[in-house]
Length: 559
Image 1 (tube, rainbow, N blue to C red):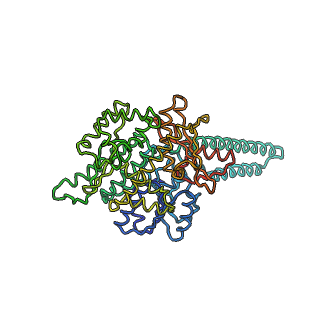
Image 2 (cartoon, rainbow, N blue to C red):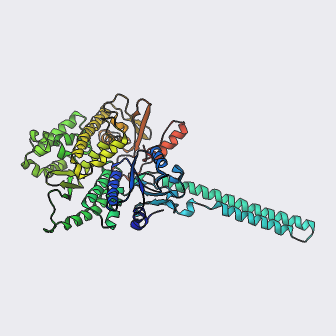
């Protein structure tokens, strides 16, 4: 059941209860969790935080806590399956689900007792009507049986002769049989129509409004929103854009909504009487460069390791490297300045850097080098773009350098979102640089060695054991970034028009000791793509038809 009044039907209920937060391992979920934690701290709500990696882990976490808790809040997990069938809870367990995964399972939508969906209904959900999906067959059967038995008793009570009784009994029996056949035919037609409706509704996986934005809306409704909460909601939205989960139009629409909140918060502090200290947080909207981490890196490294510029220049080729040198020459920036850290560049160079890069980018066909985004200042020293924080948090969340469990990485990624933990954020940025370099080198290797193969209706690439940094790509966020980067690079480099419109399936070793592989599918590369992914259902059917051992454990069904 959809929650219409988020304050009355959700927060006012859990504020006096002990709650379990079951949080998926993605950046948007972390940001939504931070906002909800801040609200719970305001109202002294007792809660237990449990990060969950997949469906199996979710089931285990529920079993561990179902005896002590009645209320469960699921963030970015639980909406796209029949949750009651999956978890088999007691009747008094209540689940509040804030999830961006679409489509939402129809059983969750029409269950009005235990499932409460914290989902924006202005998203294009396309939910089938109740009558098309559910049917009360028991009542119909009882009614049919009553008709049949009633007709038989009427026939038996007829006081006429034996022949007449037999004729009428036969006639009534045929009439009842015809009605039963008609009901069975109508039922088969209804079931066929139901299968068709459900197939159309469930065949594509996509993402809706950010969970962090939804939680920020809750804080705003209760007039408890702060700049920190607003910044977390911005990071949640940016995570969807960085990991290619939403369309550009959806991103711009949500950016505009958040921009109004930024203006409102900034307007509060324009008064001299209410001026903030140097420890304050300042958020600003701007058109910035699509260069990953360039303010914490050298400009040259950022251009080489950003998907947009690397693919446009085709930096894996000699001609691409020449083109990059021409681009740098056109900007008129000294190589010494370009190759040193951004913070060490001359102020005179940095003043008009964005305009200079944009002008040269237009000449080289990169007309979308700037994008709408937000930046934050923590005091006077630290400035970060929202995409910087997304890359840093994702690198911490999927850190493979140390043999640490997923829960430890989750806590570190959660910590880096707090402005009191800037050191942790810088550690994440350093890890993100290594990750982006690994992705760029893997893409160059795959393109140059023709590892990307055309397999009929899709493209396929398999990273083998022993590939450099292959351990990094055993994680879903890193693998999805690699997939996106590799497909764009292939489309830019191939001359085969048919291959340009094919989806990509990528496989990488997940656990070498167990011999398992993680498989991910993404839709074709297109600026007008609706970001709907059909691989979730396709993987299930393929595993079933080939009798393969497959574990569909991830909350994104396409991996």
